[in-house]
Image (cartoon, rainbow, N blue to C red; front, side):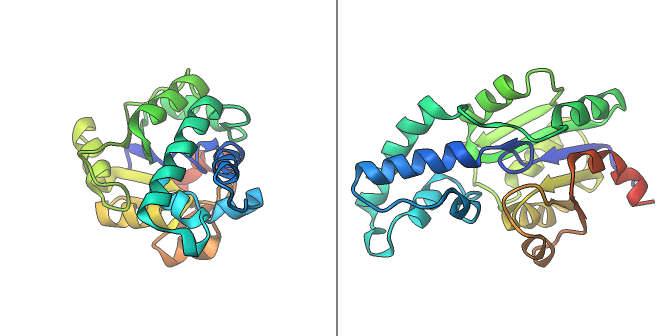
Length: 220
């Protein structure tokens, strides 16, 4: 079946959010008297939602429910005010999305960011892009790698999951794609390694957003 749609992860795939996320967590940790991390460490922390992000950033001996909840609240307040200080689309992403739209490819976004913040990021940083659906994490739906969100998007677009490319930068994304029976494409400009992507189901790896436009030809 020809691929008719692309489902994108957000952080590490469409947007480089590393600095603003890492800076917000570090500021929350500092407020609570905990040590901070080099920003590069956050490449391994991001991708599974805010609770796990905070859990990974806290010292092991302080990973209790109360401390996680308090630090999470501080992080959310800081990040809500500073989510777009340095966050930007990756090189060529807006142009690639525009080209895909002119080719008639359906496009959607699925993120483990809270739904409202996901909408805000897409609206403000990719304002001219033509997404047919955008979903973030919602209380009533399980987060990735559960495939429920991906399958909901496929249903909304009236396109079978097998006709989707799924693009993401982490094991979570590849597991989601596999579980949803979409075609897993790992992107190498994001936060995780080629080994992680391949070990978790990536069938193709691409090293620059412009290569997204070559995917139909790669599979012929």
